[in-house]
Image: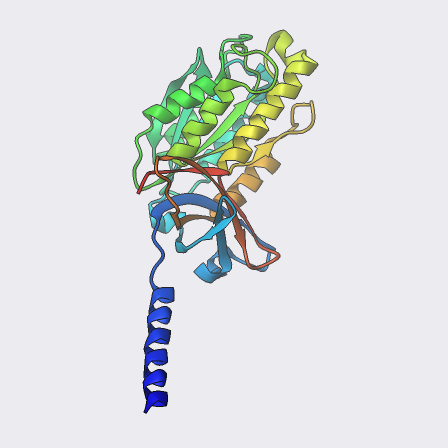
Length: 304
């Protein structure tokens, strides 16, 4: 009889532990835009939740959703051109127009020019891609007119109303910051990254030289490109450049960006909250060696 009782007690204890182990893990739902990079014969749509890995401060967190952006609410895309960019970028306008016209009908596109620390809107977000394409013009090409392109980006993000659609930016700039100058720890770059990460905005950047003497400054080119790379990497975007030279054509960059946009998903996971709200480091990966997930380096997690 004692053996039977022990068996029953042991069984109940095992069931209790099993139930406790299978209980859903607590956390705060956080969504990010994840770009899937796969071999040509693999699609991101083949991935399951079990294939996805999200770590927060090196601790694995549960993934609860993985939906193509088109099904999750679509995309809002701002094309920002630095008004202090060398006027030679005019040779790329036809390629930019084709890129705009080639976006899915559901994508809203806005066009703006960065100057004096803000964005001069040439065309507000709109689904009429022809109107958006027609709004593209040559930059003013006045050296230093953009002030800090990072202040302009931050200003746009703060004014950009959140909705169901994912939000992304394609920014054409030298990356040079006439306000801060050159060197590490640019506070305006850090502020733009924080604003983008908190809002879930992905920023892609294309390097094109500045007008005037700034475009020929080796130190300026170095730091400008470094700032652009830092901004894109931290937000889950891509930085495009061709050394210290202006690209002959934007087509390879825009084709690559189109591929990325077509393989983007809204990934939702349960973040572990702290006592106070704040940024948490995350890393995205997959269980499949040949498939890579690209996303922001940090997310903003509210307190529980």
